[in-house]
Length: 540
Image 1 (cartoon, rainbow, N blue to C red):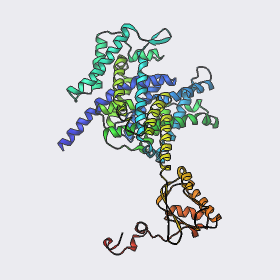
Image 2 (cartoon, rainbow, N blue to C red):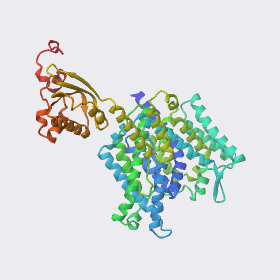
Image 3 (tube, rainbow, N blue to C red):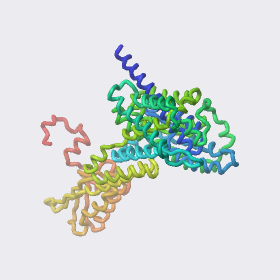
C-alpha cells in the first residue's frame, strides 16, 4: 500500500511539473493562432483553457493536451472576415459568427462520438501516420521561424547582427539544457528548467530580446491580463438564427469538425504508441465536441488536440489527467494573476522548446526504411508529409488514406486466379482463388471462355470471397452468358450472404447454386452437430 501511494505521489509530481511547462508553451501558441484567425489574443487563450480543461477531465486519452491550433485557425480566417463584412464597420460580427460555428462544430463532433465514428481512425495506414508526424514536425518548425523576425515600422523583417545572434544563442542554450539535463538527472523537468534558466538570464542580464509581452503587443494585442470567460449573450442578439446563417456556417463547421477530429485522433494514436497504452477514440470525440460547444458559448475560438504540447507533456513525465488539468488551470492563473510575469518570458526559450519537440516528433526512421518498404508506401509517406505542409492535416490524411486504399485495391485485384480442370463426365471446373470485388472483375471475366467451354460448367468459389455488389453483378452476368449459349452452369461454395443476395436478384439462382456441400471444411463450419464421433475417426 505504501508503494502504491509513493507511485501515485511520484506521478502527481511529474504531472504537475509537466503541466506547468505545457502552460508556458501554450501561451505564445494560443496568442499566435488567435492573430492568425483575426481575433483578440484572449479569445485564443480562453479556448486553450476551456478546451484543455474539459478534454483533460472527460477525454479519451490521459496525458494528451488540447487547445487552440493553427490547423483550425487557418480555416477561421475567411469565416471571421466574411462575418465582419456582413455587419457594420467596427461591429466585429465575424467574431460572433465564429462562436456560433464553433458550437455547431462541437455538435458535429459529439455526433461522431455518439455514432462511434472514432474507430475509423484505425483504418489510417502506418505510412500515413509517419507522413503525418513528419509533416507536422515541419509545420511546427516553419511556424517557429517567424519568431526570428522583428518589427520595424509596420513591417516584420528578419533579424540581423547582434539581435539575431542573441536569439540563436538563447535558443541553443534552451535546447542544450533540454538535451543535457536528462543525462544528469531525470527527476527535473528539462523543458521547465530550460525556460526558467533562460528567462533568468534575460531578466537579470537586462537583455533586449522579444518576450511574450512584446509578441502580443506587436500583434496588436494589449496583453495577457483578463478576467474569467463570460457567457456570450450577444451571440443570440447579433447572429440571426435562420436558414441563411446555417448555410453560411455549416460548411465551415463541418471542415473544422473534420480537421479537429482527425488531428485529435491522430495525436491520440501517436500518444498511444509512445506510452504503450490504449485511449478511447469515441470518448475523445464526445469530449472534444462538448468542449467546443462550451468554448463557443463562453467566447473561445475552439480547438483540438495539440501534438507539440502533447509531446512536451508526455516527455516531461505527464501521463495522467492531472497534467492537462494543471496546464489549463495554470494558463487561467497566468491570465488572472501572473500576466506580468509570463509576459517577461523570452520567446527564444519557447522556440527552443518547440525545436526540441520538432526533433522528437519527426520520424527519423523513415529515412532508414525508404529503400526497405514498397514504393507505394514511400509515395504515401512523402505525399502526406508534403500535403500537410502545403495544405492542412485533414487534406493530407484523407489523400493518404485514399492513395493507400487504391494501392491495396489494385494489388488485391491482381490476385484473382482460376484453376481449370475437367471431370470424367466432361464437366469443366473453374476453381476461383482470391478476392472478387470491383477491382478484380475484369480479370475474373477474362478467365472464362464461354463460347468454347463444354455444355456443363461448374464454378467453385471455395478459395474466393465475393466482397461487393460489383462481384455479384459479375456473377449474374456470367450466368446469363452461359445460359444464352444454352449451357448448364453451377455455382459452388458461395458464402451464405452472397447466396442470399443472388436469390433476391433472381429466382433462377435457386437452380444454379449448389447447396449440397461436399467439402469437409464447409461441413465443419456449417453444422458441427453432424459430427458425433471423435475427430480422429474422420478422414479429414
